[in-house]
Image 1 (cartoon, rainbow, N blue to C red):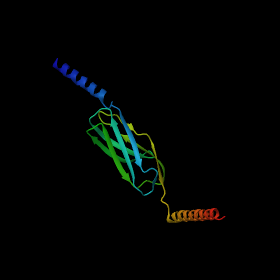
Image 2 (image 1 turned 45 degrees about the horizontal axis):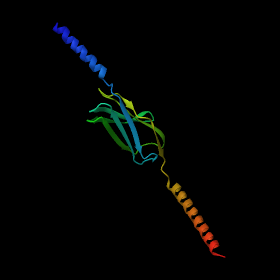
Image 3 (image 1 turned 120 degrees about the vertical axis):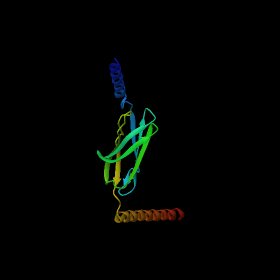
Length: 157
């Protein structure tokens, strides 16, 4: 009889544990700054995971760049919200899709952030900067000249 009772309790707790494993939903969000950015400059990424049941979130957040793993960070907090961040300067020029995925734990389910579109612009060359400056100075001179003409025509009878 004791054997059957022990088996019953083991089976009961196994079923209870299995039914509660990773059944609590989570929400993952992703933000980046700045966006758009310039190649070679700092870009920061922050993922926030919110669980519906406190007190502990454990697991891994994987940041994906264009559907490939880019960075993975551990999550371990004593609250129902966890935030992980990193900074990089190695993003290639172009338009990219970014997503953060929380791996889940024994209590919390996995979740994905919505896809975030990130634009990385090329660095302006010194020739481009000089051309932009020369156009700026030309426009300023024309506006100054136009203002002087109008001032003269208004003052003359």
